[in-house]
Image (cartoon, rainbow, N blue to C red; front, side, top):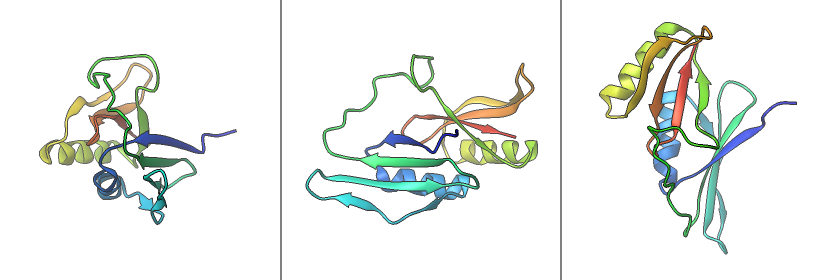
Length: 129
C-alpha cells in the first residue's frame, strides 16, 4: 500500500497552486469546480506517486493551530529533493522570498538532512534530501 494523496483546505487556491508549482516543480490538473457547493480543487503532482490536493470552499474555517507549535494530527508532510545542496538552495530562496523557515537545514538524529518551512497557509513542509 502507499499514500495516494494528501489534501489541504485553503482560502487561497490559486496562490497555493502557484507556490507549489514555482518552488517544488509541481504540475497541476485543470481546476475541478462544483458550482452548487462553491467547491474548487486541484491535484498537484510531483515526481512520484503521491499527490497533493488543494481545495477551497466557502465556509471552511481557518485552522486555529499555531504552526510553530506541535499539536495532534497531521503536523507536516515532506517533499524530497535531489541533494543537500538543493535543500540549502530552496530553503534560502524561500526565506529570501519572505516565507517562514521553522527549522534551518540540518542533519536530524535519524540521519535525514532537512529543513522545515511554512507554505502560504502556514502548513509545515519538510524539504528533505
